[in-house]
Image 1 (cartoon, rainbow, N blue to C red):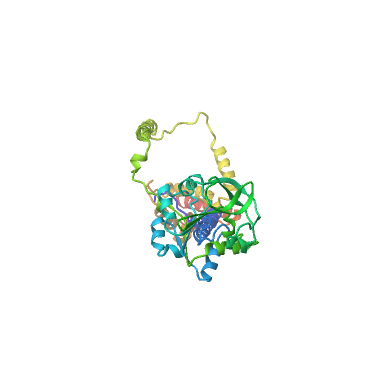
Image 2: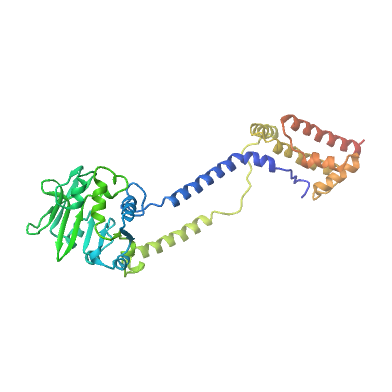
Length: 388
């Protein structure tokens, strides 16, 4: 450290200036941790999921069925569903493919796994695959009265909640039509073929946690799903999606040339901009600025920001330089060399001189003025000892 480099303790003042940002950063960090913990704890699950406790989930119905002795087995792939069904005659398969993960072949395979299958809110392609005699008929607003001999419907009496409607377009089909809303629209259609029953269910609101206890929804959901000893609750997922194509085959042909073009543009831009980054050039100002103006300007800035330590440092730099010159020290002399020389000339304690030139930190404007006067007094004492 040379005589032109004065280092003073800045930790306290820096901490004061950065206190707001430190506290703000800590608060943001806490908020982020809490948000991540909340999101991780409340991971979003699919509607009608038997493990979903949200209003749209089906956990309430699944738990009540378990209490009544029904073995509820949630599955998320066709393979798991196949493994879960040991006795097709004693198993009810509930299938809800909201994401349309299943192909027609897989959907037909799933329907053939059990003797009783309930497919919830099927769309056009699903109906064409497993129930071509049934067509969609729009949305139905509840409540819906019981209107067929099916036990689950009779025990419910009234079913509330919005539902999907279906029409029977195959007049020759011997179908069970339930939960009618007029104009040949029904929210539960039962089809039977070779002893196997397929129910097209549009009224899924009774299965949700939110509406399970409304009107006769609970009796309908428990009676429909709990008919057999085992209920396999199958919600297809990405595990059912099979793809034999690689990423390169799925990527459009224009992506490769575009990436090459972007790389060339990046290199050209780097060369273009890189040529402009040369060494800094010091240029003179077009006008002459008096030193008093810059001094007053900096003083106002220091005063406005309460930068007392920075203002005192500016005074110390000048004082150390002048003391080094008075003591005949070279320009490469350190502050410690100046302190030793000044202490020898004035008889002052080195610690006191070091405190004034380096360590002291003004806590108020009054302290800043006192330290400034002390620097001036020290400089005058050294000059008087050298040139009496």
